[in-house]
Image (tube, helix red, strand yellow):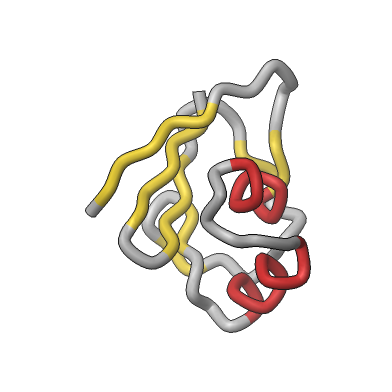
Length: 70
């Protein structure tokens, strides 16, 4: 599994925005579909809320990539 880190300057980042920022999806629409289909895990658990707030230390998994928020 690939590991990736995304550094944020704000308190949190929404899950759909994180997937776009990490280039795991090409659009917000694709992020929405993948999240609603249960393809994304946040901190090891399936998450279907595209507005889920991730803070530094949280991670999201999609396909074969884990993205950690810093």
